[in-house]
Image (tube, rainbow, N blue to C red; front, side, top):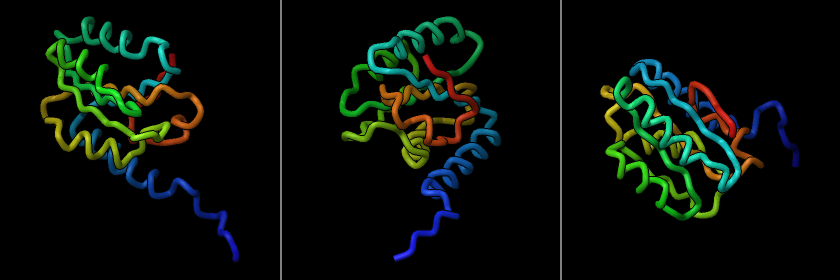
Length: 137
């Protein structure tokens, strides 16, 4: 058996991420992928950002979590669109998951999407989601 190392293992994810990025550019939506360890304050930071920017920008949040929907419920209680992605054990989000999540959002009426990535710092930074920027707490 021969393994071809010339094709990146994340090639499919990267192609889908580029499609996401092009969609976001076309719709003029800035997408921030927020990374941090569990319990570090990702949701609190998102809520503070919403409070600071909600009068200037239309915001939505994509919540990544292994199983819970607690954080997306907090976001929704603030009157902000939130889409929950439960990975069922996976430690990160992938570009295909983001695409399915944004398909239920009205991108024509959004300025900012904040992705709260799964609380893990081991593998999510390797996965391009098509975001405009990554930020880490």
